[in-house]
Amino acid sequence: MCRQFECGVLKEFLAGTVTETAALREIRKAKRLARKVVGLLECAGDRDGNRPLMKRYQKVMRQPIDLHDTGSGDQRGALMLAVQELSEILQRRFLRARPAKKTDASEF
Image 1 (cartoon, rainbow, N blue to C red):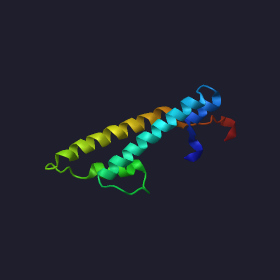
Image 2 (spheres, rainbow, N blue to C red):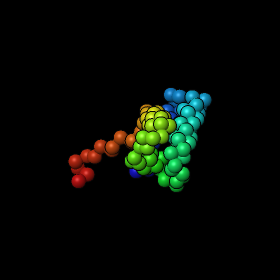
Image 3 (cartoon, helix red, strand yellow):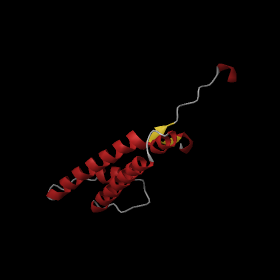
Image 4 (cartoon, rainbow, N blue to C red):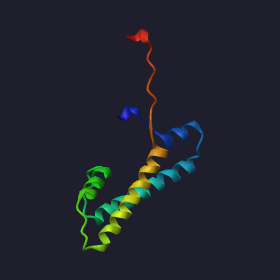
């Protein structure tokens, strides 16, 4: 998997299509969103910093909602929105799969 990954922001910077300032701004934004998600996960009771954020998010979202705790639903809503925003920026700006290499039929 790591060999298939190229950071989109780094790739754009190296190609000269984005400035260092703009690239660092995108990185800071993604890190800020990740910290927000971590904070919301911790508020929801998940403090396992060794697991990936999406696994932690899935675990929290699988838990039943306490209908007597009105803040619980608001907290989940905030978590869902933060994860969506983080996922969007990661997909749009950072996660880029390398195109598959074309193979020549004569190689077989």
